[in-house]
Length: 345
Image (cartoon, rainbow, N blue to C red):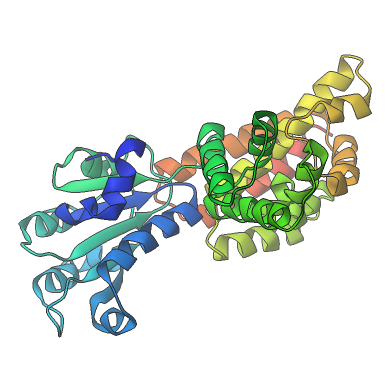
């Protein structure tokens, strides 16, 4: 059963309990963790319960030995309370024996399979979206309408008034993963809760970090601009180890180069560089303008197009293969920024 946005609130409140297994997946890793945490708090009511009731397994381990999951499903806790069973690193293809074990179990335990981005054609996603006793909850980056809704509700609860134009402006600046967006909204709330000043577009732009800064992508982007690929690898590994998926990293880099391409195209059409940069929406955070100009000089139009194409291919391969995303990144790093660019010099 696919859980759509309208069903999500009821599902997270108590609707999840009627399903024998739940798949929570998507490119927004912070949202995935947030949804899992919401359900966990409904199942495990105290730290004492967590000691006996919270079980974490790895998909690869139960795939090799399905009896591990079977034993957890058919055993009870010390206080006979429901277990919260979290299975990490779920693969794109789903083991038939694991499926049968889940369907045959008669238990009140809550079983969650955590996964990264899964394409619509993957067997895991298909199974959880079509099997009536399973549920699939996707976690994608919020679009502008969803961001605006969260922002308006947050302003209302804190009795802070923005004009519709200011709400629209703030919503265009709020980008990135779920946790990052909530953090930026909290910054706005804290600022305007402690000041009597009337909000302006310029002020809001200053308060909300630039897209790359919000997710700590600045050091990574700067390394790419400087063609320092040893440090680029270090920055990617740092983001990846903190829970940011390679797909999200690739998208952020690609978004940066798409913006570069737009400015390049405008300047080639005769628009002044400053005017072309100022035309970008959302605007570049003022601290990042110098490095953006350097990137315009460092990469040609053809090189930018190559990088965007390679990053798009990386995202596609991450969704369609079982190869570890970090290994795919190493392959595409070489292809996008070293091998193919040399052919353009």
